[in-house]
Image (cartoon, rainbow, N blue to C red; front, side, top):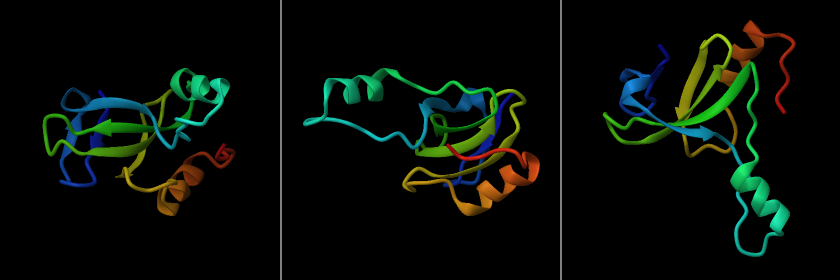
Length: 106
């Protein structure tokens, strides 16, 4: 079972206590965007086998949204961090690179 630590309340929770929010760090498009940009934002999601950045909500805890870096193939969690950041923190990137030297951020 997937377990993630909420960066706000510090609780390590199983996925049954969390709600998925899908892909993290999306560029959002709204009014003024082209139909193609808005379509891609709404429906085109990455589905990698390997390192992935996701949004999660501590639904049965503090209720806050946070981001997680994990491997979709092994469920290995590299870390969690607050949802208000625009890019993954350097310490999490370093953890990923230490375990997966060939990995590059897209």
